[in-house]
Image (cartoon, rainbow over all chains, first blue to last red; front, side, top):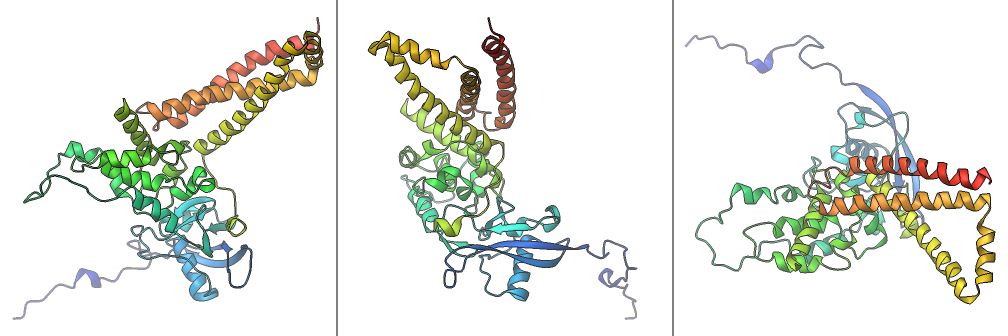
Amino acid sequence: MSTELPEPASKIELKPGVGGGGEIPQFNITLRVRRYLPETTADAYWEDFELTMYGTDRVLDALHKVKWDHDGSLSFRRSCAHGVCGSDAMRINGRNRLACKTLLKDLDHSKPITVEAIKGLPLEKDLIVDMEPFFQSYREIMPFLINKGHEPSAERYQSAEDHAKFEDTTKCILCAACTSSCPVFWTDGQYFGPAAIVNAHRFIFDSRDDAGDMRLEVLNDKEGVWRCRTTFNCTEACPRGIQVTQAIAEVKQAILARSI
Amino acid sequence: MSKASSGTLYRGREGMWSWVGHRITGVVIFLFLLVHVLDTSLVRVSPGAYDAVMATYKNPLMALGETALVAAIVFHAFNGLRLILVDFWKQGTKYHRQMLWGVLALWVVTMVAFSIRHLSIAFGGH
């Protein structure tokens, strides 16, 4: 047994700068965070943090750096940190984004990067809002399969064409970036909001579901789809690229088609 | 809560600003209609009073005001058609931005034509 094993590829030494292992660019940023500490101050205020960050960092990394190295009292939500859980929706430079999906290198470093809580929901602390009104609307549209037929012994069949009708709206992660970007929702908290309508759309247009009429009835309300003023803020804010305004328009058309 | 949550203005894009424009022009048109109904109904009270009120409108300031009013109405009308298309045309949400540029182009054309005619009558003298 004297076979000579070749050196594993992972052990090959590269010269510095070869093979993409070069130094990651560094830059300085000013992170301007809208702070709100209800225990100590009555009003919210801006606080600046000077940070040195890397080209691979996201806004979430900057927030981590503040919390871990500068000011441990900074409060924000994040769970998976990879754009799936939908915990860290916030207003970055005036627009709703996920902090974990916004790369610092894509932002303008000559000006402070502003980070605020999402609008329209009760502010609890710093970047944390009370999501209960948001989830209340979500529950009201019954976001689960309702099927009155016999339970099949195998899966419920659905053609690719039928699936395509609601494929886009299955992508929602309930981050509230859309609902809290809606000018109607800011002033009228009773409005269901884009996220609830998107999730209703997901079942209304599902051929396996039997409760589409019930959901259309819920949304055919003064505070339902007719509140939508097509500002497209929701479509622009969605971190999953869901065509939210399109989905709302389809629900509007379905309600009209049903009543004719 | 309102104090604590106030921050920067939301940086919406074309869709949001066209909605803001639609709202503002809508309120302007409503206020005009309010005054318009009042001054027109004066003719039933007394034709003399009606003529007197109409005469006060014939000045350069009102001519500019009328231009602004027509600007608001024309935008509201064209953008209203765009909103109907956004809601009910299948491709509407896809092309809402292009349709807004169309609305603004039509608005400019209409306003240039109207302003030339209206202001030349108002300021040209007879």
